[in-house]
Image (cartoon, rainbow, N blue to C red; front, side, top):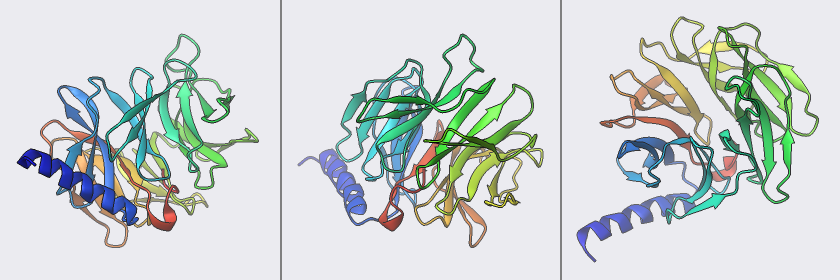
Length: 294
């Protein structure tokens, strides 16, 4: 076995072993390779990184299936793939409609939510759910203007999303997957982006209420708490399986890279230091929390 083959084998063994042990140490993210945003992975110490896709096209969003071994990969052009993280094998998923955005897997892994505009306007999206087995497509919202960035509730019964009118407000809403009833959670509270829902209903998001995009928490009772305070951009938080840490991307070192925030210590630390950027990290599900955090 040549040295580079050994390194690839050892890296694959490390990640597959971590997954089989249920350890919450694998983080997938988007990084630049040959000018495109491809899928990469690292561990929680940032010591091991590996490029997983070579699509030659920009990936716009990724999310974990509840097995913690496969990813749903949504390309900017609307194509969808299922990626086996261990083997790097890609299987294309026939898209129910063209130009799908924001595709994210349900907690059970049997469906995915996405946003889509069926009109000529890019600011006229609604929220849909596609059921993989039955190939049934459900339109959950029929609201004016832009509905986007769906995020599943831990029980899979609801989807949180953002709704904006093109102005300075993008508020948080919630829609029932079966009832299709909607509930507005924030009203005219400036921008909210990058929702991530913890198993107890606490929402992490990036918001500019303070005049700069920072990480925030929103409790189920509506109480909010600012987590970070830095002049750089802090965005796209994603929960650890235990719900005690957040991985996010930030430009605080001058380049877009991944950082970790610990809720107990209120401290941040850098996870990646890349030449061309790293963003949109998603923590692999593990243990009893497997599949809860999306």
